[in-house]
Length: 553
Image 1: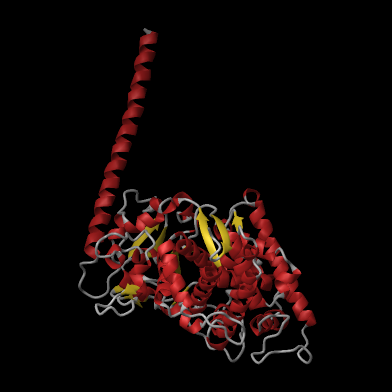
Image 2 (image 1 turned 90 degrees about the vertical axis):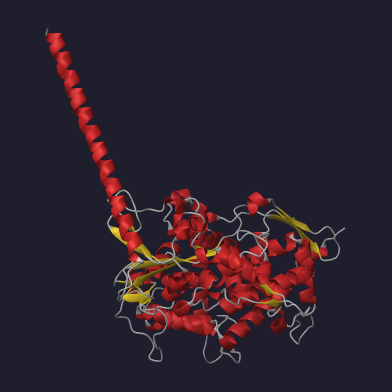
């Protein structure tokens, strides 16, 4: 009897517990369904509000405490914006992650309106980049973000809302990458690159050379030519290993931004230390050896020690006048060198792959390049002003950026803002991407559907007239859907130089080399691990055989 009594008691408790679990599970399912129904109804009604300003609704979701995490973003971000539920959304909305909310801007007219705002700040990204990627000290990062820092009296705040030092630094960079200084920078780059290509071993060997990684050419020749153009020859001469370490640093931005533990990426962190030390060594040496009375300056105030007065004046201001640690300024300048070269070089690399692997496209590009040849007094082989206006070369440049440059624009509102008829409150994070517009088939698909938006086709930017006139480069009606350089208040100051860099490099390469791309489609797919951080290079190493143009059997 005791055994039977125990058995009945045990089974009763067992069924009681399971009943409670079942009821709890049912209650949770009912609550989740109810929550989804409510958020879905509110979401649908938000855009119908015709009275006054509208508040971006929360995206429908089941679990109120977990929120609405777009999980697909972590493994297939491009598809998230092109073929998922999110691709159908054309107005701002909110996603909720636990207790935090983020405002997501969808619809190209809303994205452009968002980027035009001057009362939003990207300081949070700048601070994270300097701290996590460039290893700037916390003290220096805090000074950059302080509203109490003073800047030179001639400075007027422009562009996005930002703390004084961020805003001043941004204005100096805009000035350096525009006008005459940008012209002189591009000329120096052209001369340096022509010299390096002329001395390349592929031109002296009948069989050419095989590169296990085609990117090596862009690291050791193209990037080095750019570094010499910006910094003078001293940076690389004092540390010949700088281009290699800098290439590793640039290629691993996600490693640093995601705070990958050092023991999982020892080579990457070692490379970062090498480039910071090299920049600090160069700047300290240049500062100690520069003499305002005896150091020769050219007509623009540049000198051979610093390469450009841009670096000399920034160092003087931050180190001598404001008391920043030279290592922190080396971190700052590493960030500038990254911004000036990483995406520029990556896009040029992708363009070269596309041109050399398509023999028909290669021949058409060579025709344009040939039409612009003619040495000037500096020994340059091309009329650069004509070269950068060639329609097909411009189309190759633009199409590569459309296909591979996926930017995330993250801002924080400093006051309540209006994005068309939508209101976003103060102190909120607002995020937009270039991807939805750049991968929109309604904008970019060709009439017969032969060139899907996820394929490279420069013809998207070519305009053909009916009277047999030459084709023209055109972006008419597509400007708001092509945002590799941003838009509005924070338009990339280096966009014109990026175009010159790419087209001049391509011209010199196709004029000098034949090149076989030794990689299949699997290795050429975009590296989605860098999504949101600029140009997505190939996911694997791309081999190449390079030899003198015209000697290929």
